[in-house]
Length: 410
Image (cartoon, rainbow, N blue to C red; front, top):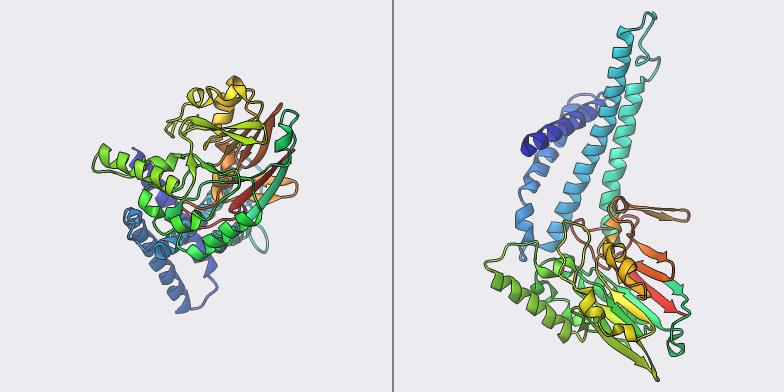
């Protein structure tokens, strides 16, 4: 049944897309009209062919640059057709409504669907082509932003922060997804930007790889350069467990995870696995709590144990929690651990698509996650959701740029 529904939807999309192309070239003289229609059909057949290449692109030896181009074209082409189809379908429903209404109306004259000059349907078809083309161009443009790192700075004030930690500068990065990278020099520029912030401590909040530890092979030397006086601390994200690929055995999957843990250590990062550490300055201290992935979304696995990680941390006046999935904040942190002052998360990437301008902050991810990017507050507790350092799936960013977070505590 699902396959049948998918085929029907795909057929509708292709039908309306073809209608739009015919409308676009109706004023073009032969043989150029046939040439343009033929080009569109060739692109469509190419797109279908690329869909069958998706399983091949999961292999590590598949060229990353080619993969990025294929994904961007395939996604842009699909979204363009989908937008055109939705707009034209709405127009057909509008005209159908007028037709049904006319059957019960005694009023003479032309149907409201037929007007002098450009018909309303012609206008809608042009709008559909314009919107669809704009989306396609935007998707292609977004590829240029995948290494366009931006520094986001915020200042948080706490009454209970020990005096020796006043002015503590935290840098947070998240969701590196090294398996998507294809430019070590561009990534190095991001590392240089992090170090230029002169952080006292660096926190990484999960998803070092897409699936396999071997993805870090070309980037260990780059990320090993991260350092801070009070250390670099990290946690695991949902992609780090290898849950999204097939393994020959559970032992192979476990070995992959263990190798990934070793990579954290080799880079000089202190990986927190359902535990906490104490950071001291002078004679005062704060607790940094790190949990494995905990999600309150059904589609993601949970491996973490905050109760275990928290045990003993209650003796410290100020606590920072590293937890990859922001759904954990409302799911458990706020209700059971009101003394955790700051939670740092990632995971959402801000969908890598959205709008962030003064007065407007929107992304489709907000319909899945209440907290999806930036800072949130619940009484005296704060959550910061990093928009991600890397990218996954779509090799680009539109509106939601890769982020380096700087948090100054006061």
